Image 1 (tube, one colour):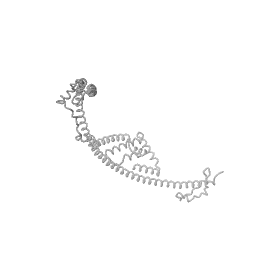
Image 2 (image 1 turned 135 degrees about the vertical axis):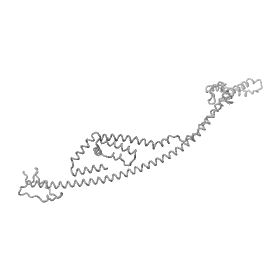
Image 3 (image 1 turned 30 degrees about the horizontal axis):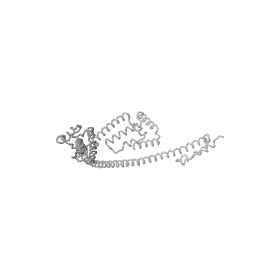
Length: 373
């Protein structure tokens, strides 16, 4: 703002005193110094430096904004005040780098480190549920001797305290057991329809087959039942573990939900405080801008008023000069014995100066009474 005021005052002074030579010399110097440094480059470097400075140490002066709104002519005039603009910008670039590095180190050291640590830390790990392993059947003792070893004795592989019977082997036994099971129903029906007495000789053949089939079915069912018992024990252990772990997960999720709720509340509070700070900064910035605009308008109006006064004064002097020039022309073409100066020309102050109408002048510029046809 101060630079803008000085530039306009200089312009007004130059209009009043017509100091053309001084302004020409200044413009030449500014042009010479800005040959290698453009206003855009100078402005950008300055704004970068201002921003870096503000980050390192907030001043509240809005320097970057004020630099950015300068016109190219103002920037050029600024460059003209620097003996070696290129060296100046080189130093500024190095300073801006140092400020940026210092600001980054300061930011990492004071702010985000603790916040990042809080975010990266596990959320109450000691409260998480411990894994509930399946309570598989024992791999030794009576269960192993009665169930697992029995399964293995029938040639069914794969069975262990944690593994089920081999599906292929189990399928082979099912292929035996299932037809026997269906046959039992048929044999039992035939024995009943024949009215056989189980101790009688006549029906010994039919009912004997039934009894044999029942025994075969029981034998065939032993390994299948053993597999069913074993696989049921494994299924029960895993179902129980799934249930217990699911309960733990539900509790953990509930706990995490509570932690997230508290975290959200903290974030909302931080954001609210941040918004309040931003609003306050913007309000202060707006107040500064409003005050600067009011002062700027006042300065512009004052300068325009002064300029208008100078223009009016020049117009008055031109009217006086024109009246006197025309009077001189009239006296020059008037015979010497008849010359009589108009006293109003000598005392007029501008608008009251006598001026000959254009119709009194001939086409060649002489007065009408001396024109030649």
